[in-house]
Image 1 (cartoon, rainbow, N blue to C red):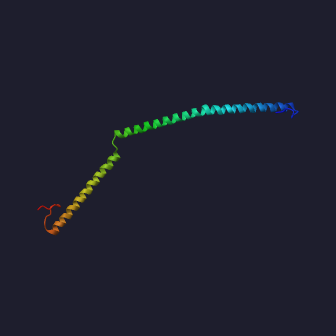
Image 2 (cartoon, rainbow, N blue to C red):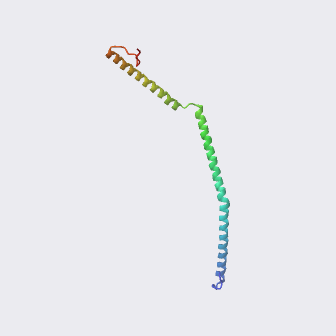
Length: 122
């Protein structure tokens, strides 16, 4: 700044100090941005990636241990469903067989003769 504009030495000295401070501040901000972009952000990204990797590994280990636990003991709920399905199937087959034999008995009673299932031999 041109000191001839100001006749006051004190004001000129203060303006020079402010100019130097602004220059130092500008240099410090440039250094901070350079350091942040070249070191801090990549290091933070590496740390974040390492944490994510460790969390994924821990999750995988937990899932594997749970699967091992399931293999060790039979799944009772699945066994219950399978057993229930077998019982329901047997009951359905029993009802079907009873209805079929009742229908055949009615046919025999109505026709007055005995039938051989569905085969006729000559």
